[in-house]
Length: 255
Image 1 (cartoon, one colour):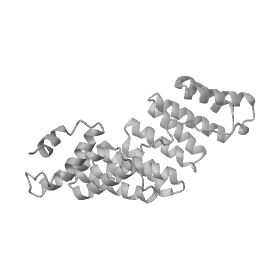
Image 2 (cartoon, rainbow, N blue to C red; image 1 turned 135 degrees about the horizontal axis):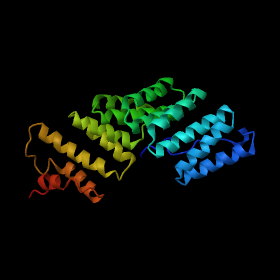
Image 3 (cartoon, rainbow, N blue to C red; image 1 turned 120 degrees about the vertical axis):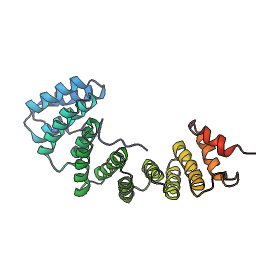
Image 4 (spheres, rainbow, N blue to C red; image 1 turned 30 degrees about the vertical axis):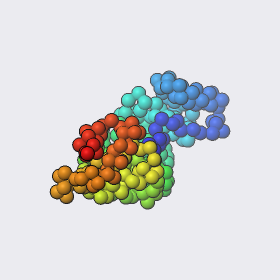
């Protein structure tokens, strides 16, 4: 449901590219330290790899993995520099642009991150990386309050992945904020279809149904009118959501 794209996974490489056994040992030790969360030690290993092995693929892998390690340590500016060096060595690999975009996001350079994602989207040479780039662009636009753009991003995303419940939820919340309750209800329904225990989607769908009723001037809808909304709200509560108790009390406990 949530994206697990690139960040946090070291770039793996066949040890056949190494010309020296020492290089292989350094590379494997770096990966071992990364997986154990020993990021400072991993950085030292990958720095040694970059300095000792004069093979572009090896250097690129070293920069990527050192960048991932630095991102884990919240050394975002240094991580960005490492990913930039990796891109200089191989500008075809779209994953490095996504990695750099994520570090820019973490550093708060949101518009710069969107530039990296736009590059990947425009290139359209790697479907998985393009999917990730559209996803993160939507997340950034949402955080910036650009809800119309979020909807456009989600529309594009569904052309490559129409089964992601999180993106339906995100588009639903954007539609809610814009007052498009009928569309948000459809979005939450799709989210629930692909993730049946999505209690936030049940809660939001129930709320959207009530907003649709009251927004049309029906300030005190009847119990029959709120039946569907209340079913959603109670389902959300059954799944663990405690944030909608007030709505249940107001709209769902009428005699």
